[in-house]
Amino acid sequence: MLIEVGIASGLWCFGHSLLVTHWWDGVLRRRLPRAHALGRVGYVVFSTLTFLGLMAWIRTLPEHLLWDWPGGWVVLRGAGLAAALVLFWLGGRAYDNRTFLGLSQLRAWLGGRPAPEPPFRQTGILARIRHPWYTGSILLFLCCLPVTDVNAVWRGVFIVYILIGTELEERKLLRELGEQYAKYRRRVPRFLPRLR
Image 1 (cartoon, rainbow, N blue to C red):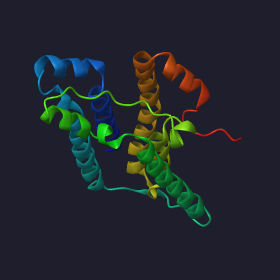
Image 2: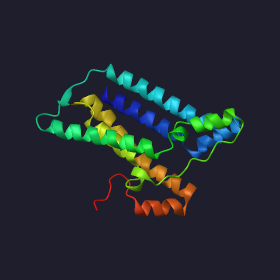
Image 3: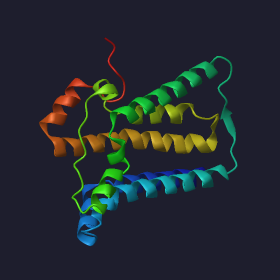
């Protein structure tokens, strides 16, 4: 069953990445030229529903406890979860969430206007680390539950996916934003802030 969990999690990650590629955007533009602006909101809905479905299926599987954060480890777990929540909150304040969720694109489409270009922001937490939500997600996956054989597999798959996906996303951003992103990358660390 662990192999199936790994395969299912990996397939979700593959689909999640495929749907944000320039290739998929081109498919939408060719097949649905007038509705292509709905791609982002469709991506968010599809990704959310399929992730919830995957997690619902995984919850039905028998698990064997490997580690339950004994003794003082529970403090480390709590600190990791608190840090994840802070990073999600700070990221939410820094990002343009309407564009991230596809709502700005949907509104433009409904108004007969072209979809706005997503803004490139470097303020707030984004002035300290480039990927606060990815760092928060890694912390969440590491600290969220007692460790079982089943969730160790999907957690591992998702953490590796975040690491690989971040690299692919950064290459895409370099192509799209050029020197502006290259300078940002040189100045701001990827996952962890520099100690000053």
